[in-house]
Image 1 (cartoon, one colour):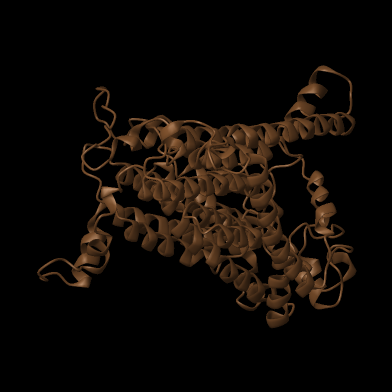
Image 2 (cartoon, rainbow, N blue to C red):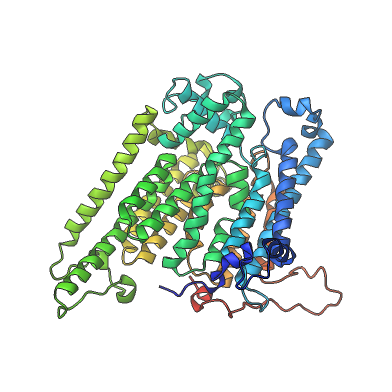
Amino acid sequence: MHPPDTSTAAPAQAVTGAVPGGGRTRMQAWADFARSPEGHAALLGFVGAALITFGGFGAGSVRTRDPLLEALHLSWLRFGHGYALSTILIWAGVLAMITAWVRLGRSTLGFGGRPVHVTLNELRAIVGIWIFPLLFAVPMFSRDAYSYLAQGALLRDGFDPYTVGPVANPGVLLDNVSPVWTTTTAPYGPAFLLLGRAITAITGDDVVSGTIALRLVMLPGLALMMWAVPYLTKHLGGRPTVALWLAVLNPLVLIHLIGGVHNEMLMVGLMCAGIALVLERHHVAGIVVVAIGVAIKATAGVALPFLVWIWMLHERERRALERAALDPHAERDPASSEQSGQPDAAKPGPDMPHPVLTFAKIAGLGLSVFAVVFVAASAIAGVGIGWLTALSGSKKIINWLSLPTVMAHATTWVTNLRLESVLSVTRTLCAVALVVVLVATWWRFRHSEREAVFGILIAFVAIVILSPAALPWYYSWPLALAAGFALSTTTSMVLVGVCTWLMLVFQPDGSIGLYSFWHVAAATFVAVVAALSLRHVDPLRLSTSSGAPREPLTLSTSAVEPATIARA
């Protein structure tokens, strides 16, 4: 385990003004923060979020009919020049948030030769500052929120969302669902349907209050991420502040998961918290939390088989310590797999049960815990397991973010085959490849805690790439875990570029921009600039008066442990 992150040694001082000996007030501490580079980034990000919110009323994923705008005589924002103005405001806000995030990253990583002084409490405060305007925005870059509400209303009104789509329950909520999803059954777990039923029971068919209520329901997931992601660095070798900056303050996460109102916010928060609990040897509690995440969205279940390895490692270590306590002269097994580098979870030893028996016991117990949680949620919701078959509904999504689609398009370029016929073949091939990758990854990464979590990360990346369909916010799944590892500067720059590109390739109304050359070209240009800006204050040299090249920023090591600048 690496030494603690020295950049967070005194987070309370920067936020509360609690400086030894007094002499500084809370207001003075906040004034100092406001004048700092972090404070400037916080303000810029807030302005960006506000622009997104205001622009969203005209160019976001707006309702089919908006009586509120009509009452305020603002319907003109949705048409003609008003729509153009709204679109400009949204993209200006997105670019402002990306700029603020990159600047904050430079301070968090310690570029420029200055000591790292950004604290976890400051970053957590900035999260609240940035999301506040987004809580009141229309759904941004996606219309999924309307589907969530319509599916909750189905359960509220006595329908089974796993057997019928929103079309079975006509009304205002149905009117706002994307046409492609009106006949699609719910692909989400029973716990999320229960949340949808509770929200629509309170808000009725009011889309505005229902959307805001959905966002409030997502906030516990955000809170769990703000705790769990930095905490994972204790076991994975990264830095808490960098992890929070990369996985939570990321515009891809905040704009899509909060602004876009996606249940990934809950699922990822629960999954990360469950993994953290298992790493801290609270195995049953951790599996319960992950099971709740699966009851939100099935993808969280990918982590469960890897958690069995971690539990087995802990059980082996516990038995080794007990044996050493009973017989101090006995040869001890390594206390941790990180020290030995051997497959401890599957290595027999003196007085130890056979690994197969240990695996069967722990896997059976974990499966039982998961089953109890899931059966209870299904019984309360009054539904079965029809969500498993509904997962195939994602095949309706066709875009360039999934490898099967890329392969199908490439095939049509060199043959006379139709996309539909080729797509079914490429999706089948990638499905087989996905199964092979998942099984191989699960078996390969079983030797240590860090390996197991890294295996979950690889599994999520494989799912996003090889599944029939992928959407930008799906990348929040692996990102939350990747942020916990020690990342090199190059890796951080690549992640900034990828996240920026994913943030920009969809339109504010939820339509796909991937089939527009100029849209993709602009997104790629901004992504490259954002990645370079993490190390270069002015990568385009727009502010230089002479032709002399600017030196890149250097990474300060005065407050950064060696593991932070090692390659992951």
